[in-house]
Image (tube, rainbow, N blue to C red):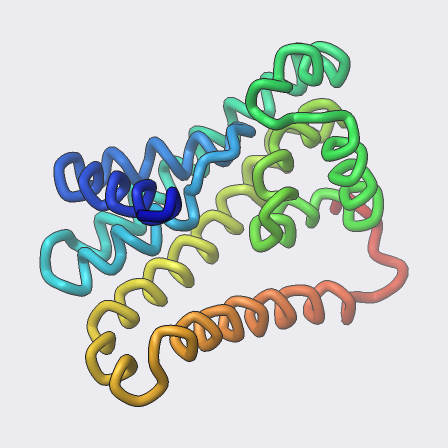
Length: 210
């Protein structure tokens, strides 16, 4: 059995046993800078809700709580430790200078809005809170953008997983497993494009970080 299947089965077992706590823990861990599959856990828990084993509202609330708490923790790690210490002790969690530099470039381009846009980009999502702290972004500004992004992301992926579980038999009969995966990927990419286009439409004179 492939390693990915072992991981998937283990996640299913954890979610079935501990429910919302697993969602908050994994999504929060990802938000604090640890490369754990927070997105996968959210989708899986939402699928459980689609089958009647959990509440979709509870899953979304747990995800938002994890993002807010984890993001705040990551911010203070970056703010108090600084980039050099974060890289030195963060290698075990996959935090490298290259990844931090890429994320900082993203922040330099979008300002505080990078916290919101980056929620939909895997690597940026993991390191955004740490880079916000390293960059001395005001904590209040970070908190607002992080909360808004967390709500949008949690609702989007939560409902996606919920609907995916409910319509799984019909979808499997029509398009097959590969088609389902492609459909989900397209939906995520489309939403990411809408978010990107929204910020691109803002006036050029808008100050970065505001």
